[in-house]
Structure formats: C-alpha cells, structure tokens
Image 1 (cartoon, rainbow, N blue to C red):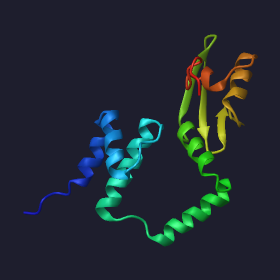
Image 2: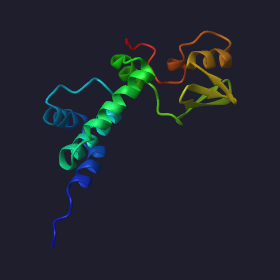
Image 3: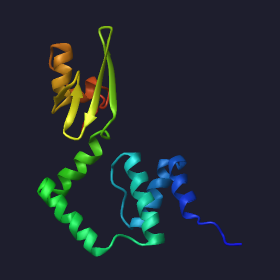
Length: 150
C-alpha cells in the first residue's frame, strides 16, 4: 500500500501551529527572517512554500508574466503593494460597528469600501459620515488600537 501524501496534512496543520513555530518554519523554508506581517499572511506564504518545495513552483514564464502585470497595476512599487496587501482586510470582509444604537455595516471592496450602497475610498470618510466628526476610520472600526504607533 502506498503511503499517503503528507503535504496536505502539513498545510492544514499551519492553522493550529503557534505563531513562534510559524516564524521558525519561515526561517527554515525561506532562509530569511519572517516579515512583520499578520499571522494569516505567514500561514498562506508557508502553505505555498511547502507545496512549492514538494511539487515544484510556477514556470519561469508565469513568474515573468505576473511580474509584468504587477508593474502595470502598481507601478512596480513592491513595498507599497506589500504594505497594502497586509493592512487591507480581505475583499468581502464585513466591518460592523454600532454607533448611538444603530448598527453600521461596511463591506471591503477591491476599490475601497461600501457603506449604505455607496462606494468610499477610506474608512475615515465613512466614520465621518456616521459620526459627523473626524475619526481615524481604522480606529473607529476597531482595526487599529488608538494608542498603537504604526
């Protein structure tokens, strides 16, 4: 009888692996220090890397095409695209905030956010529309601690 493929189990195990262990695996698999990104980012990149090493990566032509498309999309600014990808909630995420007895639901879109059927570029604009005062939208919706220094 053939042994089952251990790779899927290894990838699934990432979800319950403690963060320090994820960072250890990152060092082993990438031979670099792990980036200061969130846990979800570490899990997804580790899952890809585990599969890449086991089954092979993308063809060089595919990599070149993706790099070209990335440059067209964000002007080749790798730092800007990396920060944006890490900070932005996933498209489709619903942010819910109660304000003065009313529940407000904001949906993350590819271009920004949607609230009450209208598109917005920033959470701060939505927070201002809800409260009538200036707010940091990330703080208002609980995505960033008011005291955190970033």
